[in-house]
Image 1 (tube, one colour):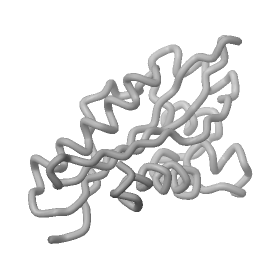
Image 2: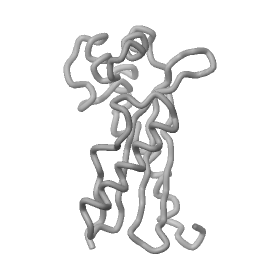
Image 3: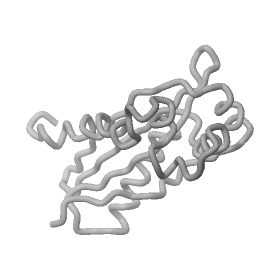
Image 4: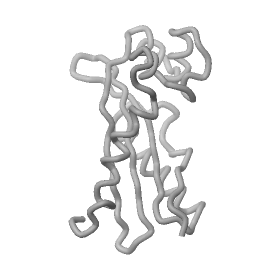
Length: 150
């Protein structure tokens, strides 16, 4: 069998605004990939989201969900680190704009959601969007790397 498929659509709101919506979006993406592309060993769903913290600040994060075709099905999931969004970005998002669009407007750039993302801009390139997701993806793989324990 082929190794894996990454789904692109998650059935979550265009801009998930809670941990639950974001986690559900990632799981839905993985399950949709499993249904649409049979024959792989693993299916991966990724979803970025936002949530308001106790200080009313918006924080950005992502969920990774990996499911297997094995019976019983194995699922691994992990959440990325989170970071606070600048108020100018938060204000636009609270007004209904998706994060990528708000990022483009505040930082005067285009298509940031497909490039280095907000994390790349805010870290001045010290962390790419790919690197930001990498740690959570590796953590989501833990059950697959240790099947006798899960």
